[in-house]
Length: 283
Image (tube, rainbow, N blue to C red; front, top):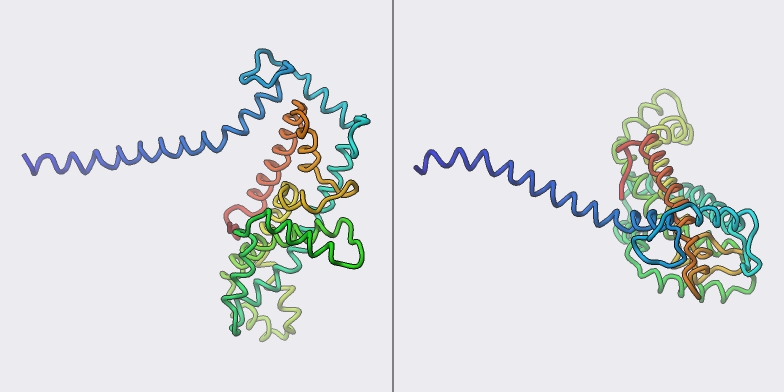
């Protein structure tokens, strides 16, 4: 009896484990996607209330969002188009600055051994776990202490700090697979160190560099908590602008604007997958 039941158990357990794993994965995906699904459903609601599910459906909030985009409300201190422009400008600057810092940092951390290297790696990763509210307050105190106003560079500096760990980690993941023998081969062919860097190392690091730049853009474009402490009327980003429309009462048009932001993020993630794939992507 014992010998005949064991083969059956060996065949049954993997199947049961697969079903359990699949059910757990489906549950996690449903929980993760639920807020986005609710937001999309509410954006198609045709009621002035926030009842869920909406009693009727239509495109009135998308028409309202388009009207606000084309003809800003007089009550808005800043138009949605201006806020979007600020977000794009800050995100693009963050993307390029983070890449310019991350590439040499990842190269140095991979190629060289120096005192305090582990501490430097910890400091680079610190913004990923640092409380965002405290980081925003700290940066606000630092910038207010300066004898001059730096305007939009407040946001750029803050966003670079937040995006740098993602950029460095992706560049480091890419350069980890590039041994020093590639550079040595370039040296044997007569290339100088700088030429070897630009002609050999950087092209091979391309997946990690692209992944780091896109992650930096996404982090900056969606950042709210730290930005909330540093923005002013002239440097209001899109997430802060959306929040400003929910302070007194929740304007249902924000659901339509939020769908627009999710579409931008989805396109960026799709672009990341097409350009990079799984190479060089590190979270």
